[in-house]
Image (tube, rainbow over all chains, first blue to last red):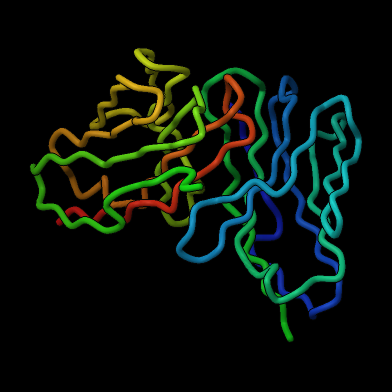
Length: 112
Length: 113
């Protein structure tokens, strides 16, 4: 099965600074790379995703970059705001109906 | 727009009791799934369904049953609760015939004593 590692497990940044979270996966057949955000007491919410034929995707302050050769993809958040404080999960997938393999999560803390 | 609705939000069971966690979605999604979330372990797939009448096992199916008689509902049954089933359970659905672009419910926190 897929082995997924996220780094760091906790990230504290000053409000307004940028944050980067990296996800490493093992299955070279993975072709779908989403990031989910989970706020306290809520379910995960998809914030951005990318396919293997695309190297980068941006949506306002968030972006995802993919390096298929090295088997890792990263979440970039610029101009961080207090509402960005949450746990972020990567979940690379090789396609099909069975489940995503979630990383263990990164707790992002935005310091005022 | 209700999205994915899970009930109850909290439940305490005694070892050996059975119960059903309810999940309903009003988005006409064919794909639905159940995950459990344990501290330090991320989310793990229990069961999933690609449409009414079709279910399949995920990574951790033991001790759980599911059925899918309608597009809207996907209940998860605990047959004989064990302390190892203490967890937070999430139901999710997708507009794709796969696990992409999942919409999650708000979860059920279950404690088994």
